[in-house]
Length: 272
Ligand SMILES: [Fe+2]
Ligand SMILES: [Fe+2]
Image (cartoon, rainbow, N blue to C red; front, side):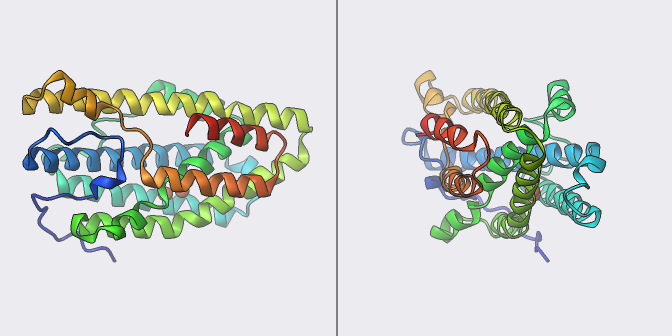
């Protein structure tokens, strides 16, 4: 059981070194804390947003997926994702109760483009993307443990629990990819796998836009200079992203899907 009964400290919630790209040098100590809270809220919203993709996709394509994964396992998969969504909402409401009085995302609200993505993505494109994003969420708790003095207990507890359950989800993603590869011509499967690239770019741009908007508002509220705002706008690749990418490449190379090595090579190049 996660204990959410904590006062939110006027201190860092997630260690700053988790986001090496942020230039917070010019901020005062208090501004750094407020910025860190914003980055933490954004991270929680990001997790909810992507969990929503998975829940909706699995529910929409359940009959097809049940050819490869037993229905009770799919049910567990969806139930766990819903529990993760709830846990991240609990964090949002704990850290910013007024802002999240309604249980809805404020920075990364669901859009029609998201609905279209869930409706149109092929199984290989969707689950290779899911596998990548799920891997990237696995290591936040590890990073927090490197600096417990900069970590807020409830955030750490949710991240730890999430990582534990998420590992089996990555396993399911990869089984679905492997089994689908067996039943489709290699060229078709590879083409569908490559269609993950526009999905990844779309998600990345959605995040970049959403974050930029928040930083602009933060900068205006704090009276930051244009240069300071620029130093905070680029989220870059977080430490957990970096660790997740490495794990993803390793597993995908072992899976050896048609088109997998080339996809990993491209992603590696773009994320260096
Ligand atoms: Fe999850
Ligand atoms: Fe998941």
